[in-house]
Amino acid sequence: MARRPVESLPFARPVLDLARDLIGMTLLLDGVGGIVVETEAYGRHDPASHSVKGPTPRNRAMFGPAGHAYVYRSYGIHWCFNVVGGEEPGCAVLVRALEPTRGLDVMRARRKLDDPRRLCAGPGRLCQALGLDASHDGLPLGAPPFALLPRAATPALVAGPRIGISRNADVPWRFGLAGSRFLSRPFPRPDAAETKF
DNA sequence: CCGCTGATAATCT
DNA sequence: GATTATCAGCGGA
Image 1 (cartoon, chains in turn blue, brown, cyan):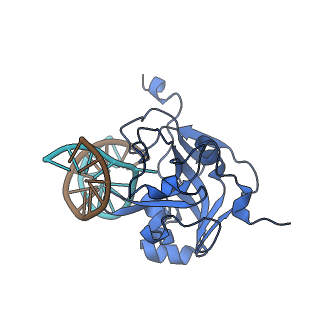
Image 2 (cartoon, rainbow, N blue to C red):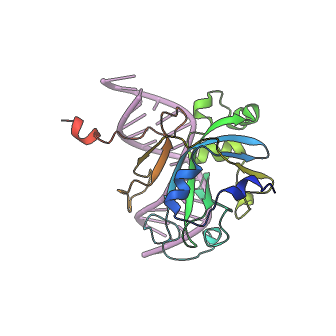
């Protein structure tokens, strides 16, 4: 018996594994979106996570069911989208960039931008392109308006430190599709510090 | 290509 | 009052 696409991915397991396995999946909102090419993992007791001090009105969805959305406002201006999941409640994966594949014309109009490389290259940018906002906070990702489709094959990944945080900033919990031209920012080379000298 | 800065409001101290 | 899981625009290399 066929299962719904999103159910083929178990969300209640280590959040680092979830962050890696979301790379290559297709995220759609009302049929508009693309391939996930960049993610970041946030743990329950991670000093950089909104959940570190326990449930609050804002992070309520992080402590709700796995496989649902956590959407919050960032810097008073932008929206950021997370996949709730992990080894315990309070974990989530921030989706930082998509390779746009579906509904390009709609996304171009929303972003007032033609260049597909920058259309969904950043957590705030992809929410603007997909029309994601607070009304989607807590919704299940396996039912309309969302769709989260499995990937065809296991892609090659790169990892590095997370972006835009000050606490627990050294752990390499940011993941990307190797060689993708749709990332929010390049990943630092592993030997970058050495080659400066 | 890279780095800097202001915008802007909810959340937290 | 300070911080923030960001971005567009700008200037320089």
